[in-house]
Length: 359
Image 1: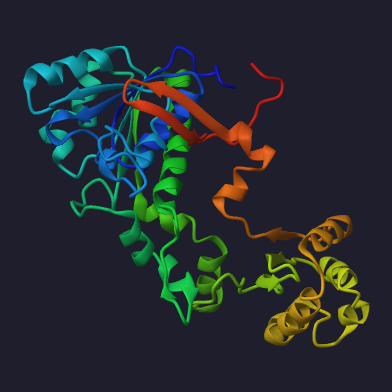
Image 2 (image 1 turned 90 degrees about the vertical axis):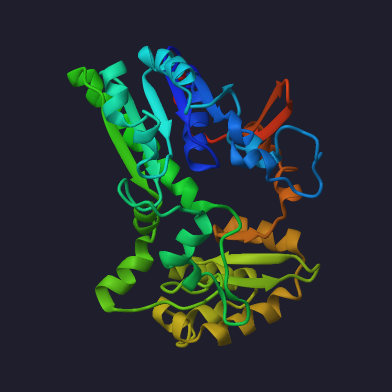
């Protein structure tokens, strides 16, 4: 699969996370990806987004390296006609352009679809905007999390609304754009024509509300801050602590799984208790149920608990920090490395699928 896009040429006119994530996706699949950065501002904004633990003199941040593996970088001033012509030359035999200009800025710089198709009629332009192609408001992930309901559900009554710990709306929009571009490539194979695909962060966020949106649209239920608790299933999202002080997340989705969990805790009668026998009963009595489960969990070590739940087919997860995550041998194949003139890149692959047989 890592050579399936060999011969494909991608020009990336985007920065921060969403657009560059799409560019890296194609780079990982073997495409030639040329990233165009604004030399008048020092390049991609994220080059300077460093933690206190990073080298302040480095030309790139860990954030920047997260989505810029495998690309050739060119620093350009698109306001200069001569340098804009250089980009047109690159686009002349390119397949895909990825951009995230604010509304109107693409036209001002001659990088809108109407301009690019004159250079290359077969070009596919994948555009990311905040609220749509004609809305000039800037878009940052946190703002979109706030405006599309995510922060109203994420957090607890004690914590108040919280953002997610990654810019998930950007990532979701990137996945939408990947899908749109791949469909545009199929269409071009059929018709020989290019096209523009536009994805807004706003609509990508709404499309990802899934069951929470349906809970409201069907019954008018407006979820509040419920931490990790699932509104439709219990015990799902409850956190219990083992004897050796490890935190375990429960994800019990069926009565059979609940019965298995009860056996792990040597509480088989609990599965037939009228208060907990069905999912609806468990939701109604979830606080009482968590107290009972926590009491039993505090008497068992995490290794024993995880082994027993695995043998019973009960879905639970040990809450792990990133050091623990990347100490797991299963995570190692997902790590990418690259040496560049600006330093070493270490990041996680944007691709989590495999093809069988491999091409």
